[in-house]
Image (cartoon, rainbow, N blue to C red; front, side, top):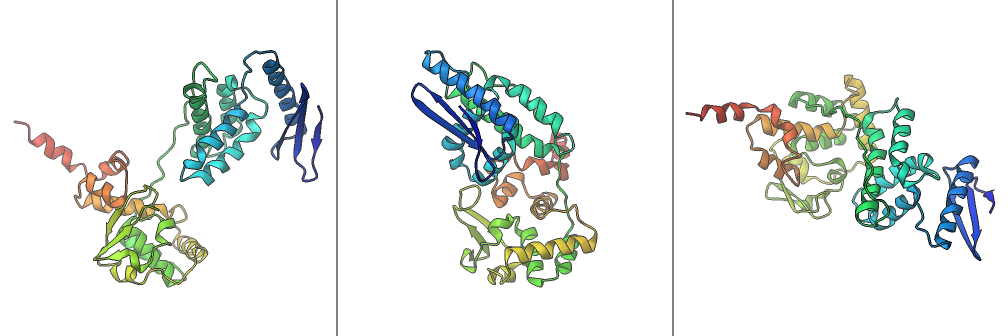
Length: 309
């Protein structure tokens, strides 16, 4: 039942019991992590052989969740990356220890942004819910409270957007900045658009979009000619580098590309466009996602109160 170090530097645990051999490898393990996993794994194998219900490991639940659930997610690649970051904390740990593991993560990552740390919490919460609801591995899901996150949205003015566009070393990147701000389309989809998706003053976003629905985005006159030239002859790296240079030149390093989408929503709301219409333009699946912009136009609250007799 050795713990061995493979030629690639990863530790491998080999457990032999009842004439069968079991192996497990992780590039995140230290030697101590591998030994701990070996002890836990051997105990669970013996429980199975004796007819006792084994106490499952967090790693087992994570592996099953990755195989059964994650492939259906559109964010599967990012989710797997967050899972890899979680592995050092869960080596050899039981499902019953999830709450303790979450406490250890919070203590170890106090210097990181709450949103970053919460990725791990959401995964732990999801796998314990699945283990409880669908797999019957635990009697109740773990109680995991997310860290409070501070909203990071920055709302730009039209003048600021134009300044960023003009500060881009490559004018084509500047055109993409304008198009992002005046359509609210996410960068990944924006860079894949062609002129064939531009029809009668609208951009048609097909089912490859994040929301998996047909989305009609009206084109503002300021970006109509840009849209007719899609795709612009510039690479994604070219857009990124020009965007970074523009932010630095204007001292706006805190502004993210996604803030162009937030700014589009804020302009619409401040212009009096109903939230449900803003949701349709942005491709939100529900107005709950759009309500974050409601505070930008509180006039409807005053109008509602004025209707009282």
